Structure formats: C-alpha cells, structure tokens
Image (cartoon, rainbow, N blue to C red; front, side):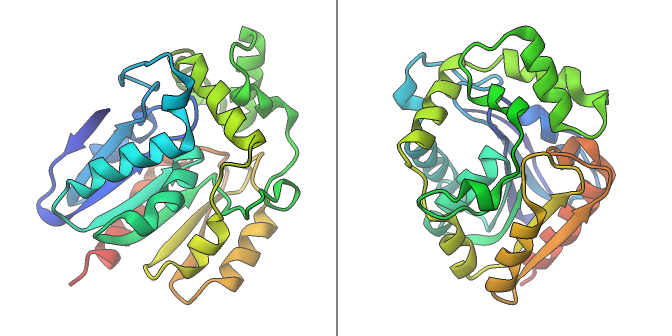
Length: 258
C-alpha cells in the first residue's frame, strides 16, 4: 500500500484510513500540521490513490482490506491511534481488537452498525450516494454524488478526482460485501472496546443518522464521546480542516499520555 508519512517528535503513531473511492489526500493538510506532534501515516487502500490496482474483486473485500491493514499497523513498534473516515471508519472498527498497541479510535461518516446491518437505523436515505457502490457511474452522477456528500462544494473537484482514480472493481467488491452481509458487528466492537473512542459528527452529513450516534454513545462506556462539526458533511478532515486538526491534536495528547 502507498502511504504518506510524517515523523513526529513524540512517541505515538496516528493512522488515517480514508473512505470508499477516496484517498489519503483527504488527510494531507492534517499530516503536514505542526500542531500534531506525533508520527502520522495516511494510507491509500489497495485500488485507491497511489496504491496498486489489482483488478481483482477479492483483493478489495472487507476481509482482505482488514488483513492488509492489520499486518501493516502491527509492524509499527509504537502506540496507535486509529482514525477512519466512512469505509475507513468501518475498517478501523473491524480491525481494532487485532491492533496490538491500540490506544484510541476516531471515526467519522461511519456509524457502528449491527450484524446483520441495520441500514434504516444507522443511515439516512440518500439515493445520490448509491453512486459510490456503482462500478462505472456516469460522470454527471459522480458530480451529483460528491456535491451531495459535502456541505461546501469547494472540495468537489478533489473528491471527483479521487473517485475517478479508484479501481471500479473496488465498488463492485464493497457492494458484494454489503449484499452478502460480510460486515462485522461494529456496534458490539465499538461499545466493548476498552480505549478512548470518539465519533466526529458532521452537522450536514447526508448519510449518517445523527440520532443513532447518540444511542451508540449512550450504550458505550465512559470512554466514548461525540464531537460535533458545524457546516460539515461527510468529510470533516477537508471540510473543517482547522477544527479537525485541533481535535486530533487534543485527542492524540490524551490517548498517548503515559
């Protein structure tokens, strides 16, 4: 996998995992921020960004992604903070219990779902976003989907470029996993995980049910909390960069504290 890395001054490594048909570029400014003093790694999942495109659906399955991520992260001899957006958040929850030195978890655009997936509870109905599970959608459909995903259209071009640069077989594989219910019980994982856990909630995220997130936090332990992002859709790391960076800087200091 391709990754962007910035070596920090303090012990502790933050791993960023992007979403479906996205890339590490959505974390680029965060990676370069001097406010965050820890080592940061933003990964391009296989088939995304600058990572290799395998043209094999099985390589893009949730299980395969989980195996690749777990192997890579457990090679790092450091305490770990996982940060995942959308698909990246779902993957972060799936692998969390397998990360040897996990100290904290941040998810956004990724409600912790049950198994079988409780779509109607966890997600909002948004037909435009079905484009992210379509192998080769029309260009106009991609534009509509990316504009729908964000509160501020300033970032649409970046999202479109990432979408077009993603192997179309990725979306086929993810759609198959959804149909075959190959998702873990993320709600149970999130609730039982014994590390600090944070949910970033975009005020205008078109896909995530905000009330469902409240229920999750209520059922979780005292180490869980929601951080709200105003004027923000599905991509807090680019839509509210300053708030995102400040939040990660604060959280990293908390979870890496000896």
